[in-house]
Image (tube, rainbow, N blue to C red; front, side, top):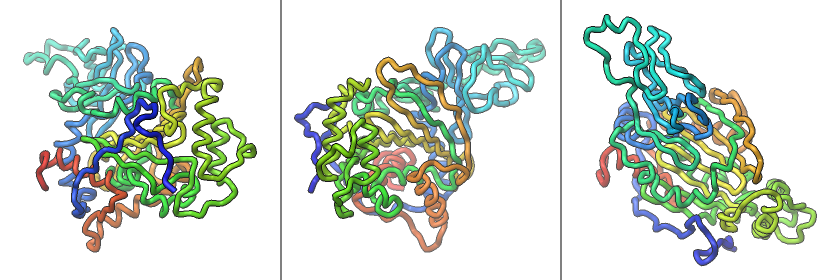
Amino acid sequence: MPIKRVKPGDFTRTPIEKAPDPQLGHAIIAKERYTSPDFMKLEWERMWKRSWLMGCREDDIPEPGDYVCTEIGREAILIVRQADMSIRAFYNVCQHRGNRLVPPGIGKLKSFKCAYHHWEYGLDGDFVRIPDKETFPQGTPCQGLPEVPCDTWGSFVWYNLNKQAEPLRDFLGVIPEHLDPYHFDRMAMTRDWTIEWDCNWKASVDAFNESYHVQGIHPQLLYYLDDLDIQIDCYDRHSRYLVPFATTSPRVKETSDIPPLIRLIMKQAGMDPADFDGKTREVRLAVQKWKRENGASQGFDYSDLNDDQLTDDYHYLIFPNITLNVHADDLMLFRQRPHPTDPNKMFYDLQNFRLLKQGEEKPERPEHRFYRHGEKSLGQVLDQDAYNLPGVQLGMQSEGFPGLWLGDQELRIRHFHKVIDDYVYGVGEAP
């Protein structure tokens, strides 16, 4: 039986219409894209240096002098709150001898002073002091720290290594219209981890942008979501799928007992599963009805969300490297970053957020943690993905494997690689 969804005529601020499927053919996706240092260089020069990238949250830098140093590839970027409360971004490198000014992370300074020779820069990137400046007859090398474009959306700060970058809103396309109703600014971060994974960054993006693997790697989720009745939408650069939660997969036989994971959804909504008298596949609509009727009294404002958004996973890929599992009460965000030199490694940033009750103050930001592959459990589902990905990367090296053989359920992956090609080879051109 098909999942009951909201219809275009129902209330919805987030567009729900099915986007036409792009006709992208059925060719193999070459494995070299995941293993080749040469392709890695092309990605860096033609894609990473021309894309808008997420740097931090706005509330990571609430006051003048607050900064975040974030890394992408071989670059480190300083995102700095200015005296007038605006935000600017600079390369984190002293113009004297190339020393990095600050290590990666969050901090607060009145100025940026190089520890090597004490060249000093203001929050605006301009020179404050050069010791023994008169001994440089050629003068200063430039006006100060090289600046990069910087903008905000969705409570996050974004930057671009291309000084002639298109406006952020143009790059994001449909994303603000789709996701503004969730009000990410009302959410507080609860986890901030970075894990060095033994795989190419694209292997990680692929893993989270199709549901075909649920029946293989995550069999427990067959009693939590419908992995087959999924709406896939591909846009200009970005994509999404809409995954029904609080239900079961058609792959499994429905039982009279509500599965434990669905019981958990009911309890988190404030329902008592013992009071529910219905079938398992009726729970989803019952939870939606309950949250609509009781959300306000619990302190949650769901007024900008449609009924499906009260249960389902609206799952977005913001090209090139932001994966969003978006729910009414929480957000799970993945940022997949390339290793500076090795195509067989990557950095997986995992951030969790929860919706605050109306009037609730934001708690203290969690401390950032760094781990290597396998050092820390990420939770059952992510552990299953993390365990699998090194094997995927090793298999990419095999003479017996030419490349990815994708089906219709993996349309988002094919679209993702098409957009990469548009950057690396030019729109409409084949490699």
